Length: 439
Image (cartoon, rainbow, N blue to C red; front, side, top):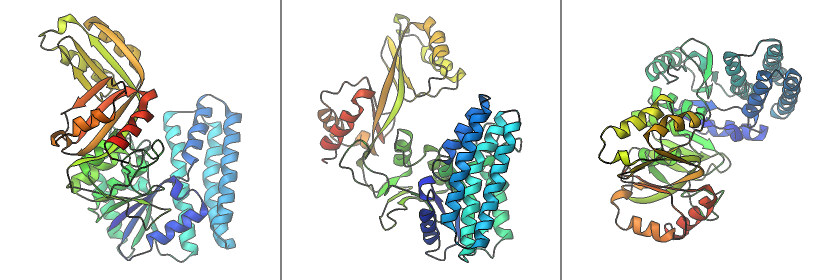
């Protein structure tokens, strides 16, 4: 059994949803299809929720009506028979009645999660109506019946596997299943979600839970590229990556794949394929256990980075100093991306400024603290590049003239990371593209 996940742009227009229906029925292999909300829906729901949180009920009502009008027009184009349109409009009515009812309810975090779940619930139900109209046998499998997270907001893979396997066994005669990405239940049984990019995570968790043959992630790009095509003119898709290489690229900025997607598939060795809905004949990128080659594969850039430098003569030969520094970040649940040290200073980077002021205040007793904002981490990724001859020489030769703030080399066999001011990101990526990839 395989898993196919389609993102918001892949189902964002009726013609694309029809194309998805063709893709999922191309062969006879039993399939679980994971759908995101229609493109733009989650952002609209976040905006509605924000208005309610700020007690701007009239503004929330206007946004709800605007979104409903979009869905009514979507239905008109998606299905053609009166019966199917009636069913599809019933779906829209059900969910927008809920959104209108919440205008009269006190806002809470639990209500916010319910609001954000509406997009995936509607997209899957509307897709089911379309499949039914076209006599494509399938079963709508509610994610809220099997997808769950624990008290630490971590997916419970064994629980998911048990519940999902039981549901599939009960419906053994079916070969096609449609379910929602992103949404789940938390440890209290409430509707919750897997955060942004969560549909990729859902697909990978489902594939791991059923030990699927493959997890296909369908987007509007033909696989992962060696560089950011939005910044650099000449890029090329990468045919194969190892899980380790893909995880590094996803974490350090490659937008096509959410970082969390790698772990479940890697645990069960389910290959992941990144494919293009708009160009289904393209090879895309296959991510699997073993790297097929050594050397540099790709570069990714992660924006919004903050560098923190702690300088203190008391560091000299002082054991326990780094532990005390790290404990500050642990206290505020703020992960560190990069770290460099010298005898009298330590520099770290973070990508979350939520607790920056408190962190700096607690670091100040250790020494002089300097903060640089608007930084970018540029990561060069490939199998065993830390041991590949001449990679460093070629890289630094290529980026002459770019001010590099920090370098991380040797911590991973698959990654060399450099911190540069965000204003030099484009120049950096273009120089690497030319000097390292020869494009």
